[in-house]
Image (tube, rainbow, N blue to C red; front, top):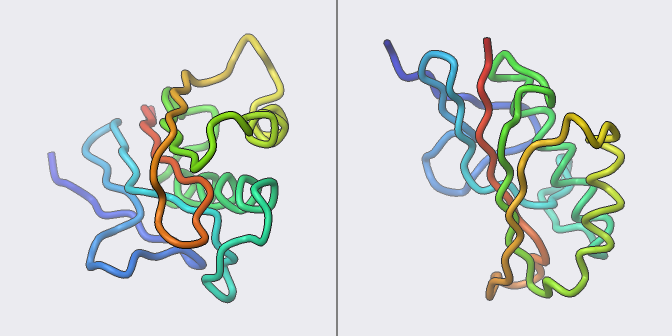
Length: 126
């Protein structure tokens, strides 16, 4: 099976890497931040960064041929893990069905600059 790099408009890395990579039915993303797709600037608040981050997640998984329903695991790094309420609010909007949510692991991390949150995901796309 050939490896396929996944790119999407409005999201890119500064380094020469794709937003995600897919081999067969498996897709893994790189690091996804809460940046404005037009300017590349981080959202001003944690809530805004969460929303922007999940907007990117949805665009990336779609560009790879899948949907949010195909995501099986999301790992999240937060500057302040005690502020998970902001993350959970956006999480429930993207994954409203408690019987069909991906697994999630949230960890505290020393994130660069104005970055308050970032994630990556694994998807299985039929």
